[in-house]
Length: 95
Image (cartoon, rainbow, N blue to C red):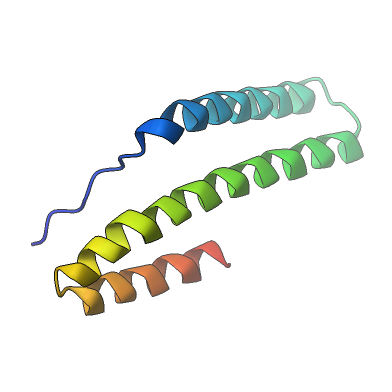
């Protein structure tokens, strides 16, 4: 079985970790809001914000994947596998 490339994006890795820490805080805040029985609309708005933040992280990682992993796979004559993998992943992301 082919070994998958590891995530490597030195310049953006620190930024992504900061963003994920912020999202983690948002999720804890949502949990607290539920525990404290806050107004449903406020909770839903926080959930929407957290989902949008995760989507932003996904876009950065997807761009990196396209620029590095997919291009590398194509250069190494493994285009069918990387394209199939990309189609599968995009399908899951679009649900």
